[in-house]
Image 1 (cartoon, rainbow, N blue to C red):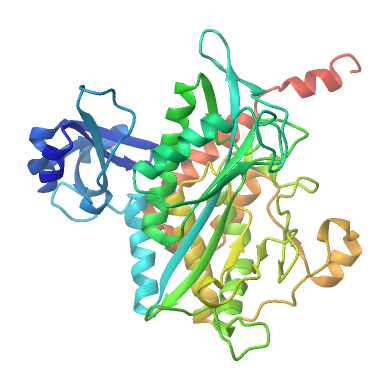
Image 2: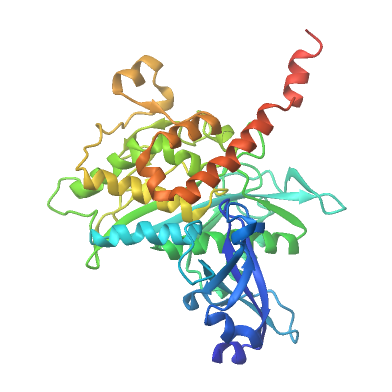
Length: 435
């Protein structure tokens, strides 16, 4: 409250996410902050995707004081707006089972019982597109640059720089930013932190990038595959488990420097990959990205070197020993994505699973027979396939909890049915003049 006075904060956004990962908020004047911190702010949960029925609509927001941050784009003299990320509770103060942030906290508590804290470093990608004169977004990229290009070829450099500056003002430690492979595609990487803080950061990142892009007259899109024929946008997750302040994935006594625990975690990730794909790749469009030829993983395998499999072990060791999960895309709900991938890895540890041999060849160049001989399966090829896999996996369902699982599948099944019943332009172009 002292910081609110010092920084001349006039309004505070009490933020939370729905099951789809979209940020929602209740805006309060700064004078109501004490009431908010006491958990006395109610909202209508029946109006939020995946929350509760009308007859049990009153929900409480419980702000997390550690998430206090001031938005850096207010004009001088107007007073500032800050945000607090909230946990969602029932009217009696008990945690709400359908709160994605609460879901991740519950799985992190399970990890803590085993002595582990998961640390996550995300690498989200996005596109910067031009807008029509009336403000509508297009899929016309701001530039024709490619990987690691710089200005003047990279015409999104100024917008990306302003995104980095805004994020730094909000407390992010940015490690790098650069142009990605596709025209108009960019990546900003921020420092690893514990899983809940990492999910908070991802949600904040998307909001900040879209806001700064609007200020530049651009549209920032986290859609996984907005343009056919070029790379889609991923969000690689660098994950490690720490125990007693030390990286439990590092073992200097092993020839490769990685612990058996890391390989058990990988085994869990591979085993449950079909099911958690529904959460990590939640859009119908997500599966336009997960195809061979565009650097996104299509096959369930791991490697110590190459970048074609689902899971990779980067070269650095010591405290930086980690695995890189390459399938998630930036449209996912970060709280649910981290919850299910952590649960998958922990299942591998609990059961002492052993992963199949590492695949250090380019999987895309292998024949189907070679992949079959190596036991390399495919990720689900559609949202419907992923939902079927999710339904069949009790470990991932339990990680989500019945409320989140049921409402997520319900929403996505409706989405699939609407898509399935549409006649798309490709079909008309392909068939109308022939049949």
